Length: 484
Image 1 (cartoon, rainbow, N blue to C red):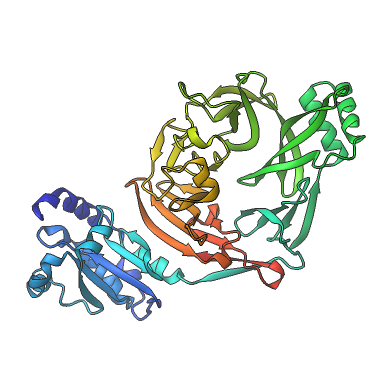
Image 2 (cartoon, rainbow, N blue to C red; image 1 turned 180 degrees about the vertical axis):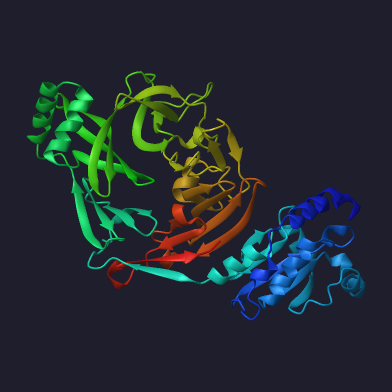
């Protein structure tokens, strides 16, 4: 067994030797141990992977900070404990214990992984290459930052929240879709209600129809009809650095005689809650069997928009994403991307093909494939997700667990995935996974109580954190909490 792991052990030697652990910076008398937090050091005797300065520096750092930890070994080494302590000079470390469990050892060991931090229970953990990083996270476990909104009251019907650091927030109600609110938390400004002005609305029509007379006529026609709700509505929001991109859908009458309605999509741009510009979407060259919908992602100044097909084909690929280039102030259709509909959607169609974007990556809401804009490839993830669901199973939850991905946030090699699952009894579980793309495995996970999960999601600018908004005190605050 030991011989078969020699390559794995040599990799640990290199990683430990290169660990940047400066013992001089450790405060000797400060304890950082947290309640319900356990530190584990997977340890495999037999090769000299522990015989290096870096490994023992890490142990001294844990001791200096009064962090209690346990060496974890496979079961078969339990009879040789006294020899192992002496041979590897482990007797001098004061805050440790020994655990013998082959199951736990096989779960936690990986060539990058030397230390494990469990928090809450064994279900929640993260792995580390050095003690310094572990201690930093250990200090943050349980810490919270409470953000108040002053007199602003978040409505129960709020469906969309975007946050930039703890400086700016955007809210949209599921009822009033032709408006959204902007809060400047950094400068303590009151909320700004953002709506379509007459000037902006006319500009969007002119950009779409490319003729001011036709645009005014179409706009006046639809304005004269009062029984059509949501004629102009904001659809999807994406925050890129300090710029907010919002897609909007606008209804017009395509045939007056038959009262047939048409529509078009625009991308509206805001900075600091102030309208900056609108970019039209020119989609005339898209293949006739496809239609675009207002779900998009901005990456490297290009726009990626979800498309749907009138009818899924069984004998050829079905695409679901189109790329648009920015030319002369407009997004021009370039091509359908080679990403094909996941196999589960061949049965359930496009109803559950909702995309979750972050940087160069995206996923659908019900498959375990991670797509990469840079490589054009899909990566199967080792995460629990639907594999054999049919339409009835997704709708009625008749089999197993129905898992829906809510959000992703990427900072390579880490990928945070938030999702909820519903079991056969209707019980809902919400989790955040910390997935390491370099080793293709989960390195941390945390479960969030249902009562606190209304708006839980990863936070891009503070990777490894999430926020939620408790449904109390008039919904007037949010909490940042460190997880990973």
